[in-house]
Length: 122
Image 1 (cartoon, rainbow, N blue to C red):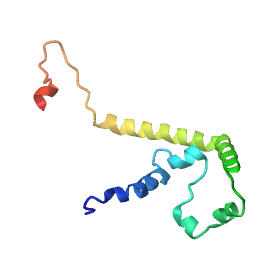
Image 2: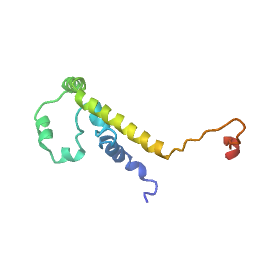
Image 3: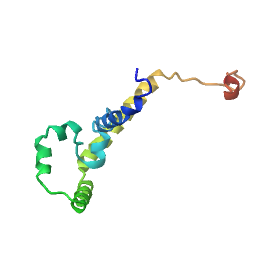
Image 4: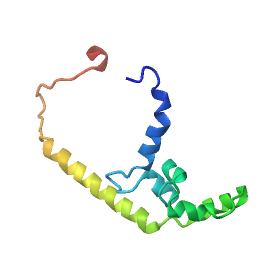
């Protein structure tokens, strides 16, 4: 389909992956790391209210660094705790689903079992 040009689309695919909310946490990886939603490229082209508010400020390397550190320090702990709670619930749900499919099997000494050896299987 892309005839060798798939690498052109890789940055867009990674952006979508990193900024999309995950089922287990309910938050995107980006928002958990930086404490806010990512600004999409479309928001820069067609400014939204939050982008316009930021654009009115003058930015230099020092102020950007200061704001980044401040953002990381005040990442919402409530948000992280909610993500941890959801992950725990998700793991519990996955474990229950797996345990429903597993059939307990008890072996006694002398029972014959099938052993798969990897190098023979290849």
